[in-house]
Length: 364
Ligand code: BG6
Image (cartoon, rainbow, N blue to C red; front, top):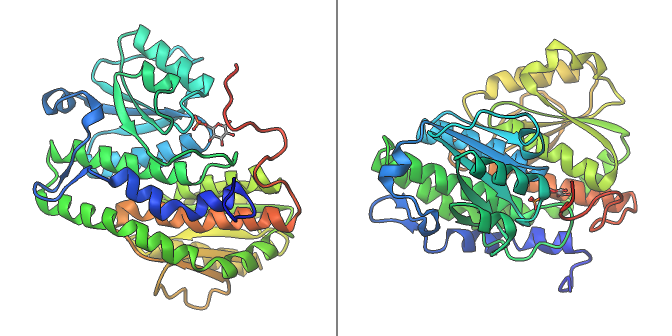
């Protein structure tokens, strides 16, 4: 059952400190400041030959893949990108020998992702899985992989599995980086940040009453923007997706930098924006974009870091603990889960079983 929680989604959100501990368990090597991934079944020599990483998944797994691609490219300095598996399998893609393909899936049974893996294998591609369900079809089909150990996820909207996907990509990215040019000091910096995540997630979850109040407000709007840039953009996409899935509100994700190239025309008192504003090298630019929004009386919810001064920008502020910049997306995603959950509750929807959706889509 849902163990005293009103919904499975709530239980799974609350489990995240523990499920993150599980995906990290036994994988951090504090002596050599690196990561041990026994399930990869590829040694350092083979892994060093890949010149590109291509990540395939569907829905939230695709957004996790987008964040994962940014982590891998930024940390390991290997060009990386993500594409919906549902598109990849239909477009007769070029399969390259020196590309590491990564399939990402909670259930391991998503048909579009499975067929993409089979197609890759048929054409000689090397593919590993970031999969939660042990022994699932995708896990069996891949050459090796990283199990996510989030435990069973019941709610249709993915929470703890998605978080562990982000951790899984960080482990993979750090591993690929340390067998290339990432220094021991950088390895140590990221390992320390990974170890801090469970306790930092606990602190975000303790802010639930505040998040519920913000969600009540947001639920009144028929349409919303979610904006973020670079590392914040997959966070915005996932936040918009969650809201759509369970509250049935229209939510659209945009790069903050693209607002002025079109969507700003829609901003006004009727259209709230949820802005992802990490305390990083783009902070000043992001604050500039927020001013553009408030100048047009657009209501704002800013998801940022503890201690950031937003200046005169009027907004609901949701502050999360700071991580290392490359890992910021993970913690910034957590409050958006609770925003979507409480928005759906406010609107009286079936949080765990949204209309028209299945937990895993095993058909074409
Ligand atoms: C969708 C689910 O159909 O499949 C999403 O509704 C999920 O919640 C997506 O993110 C991918 O599922 P999986 O199991 O491959 O991660």
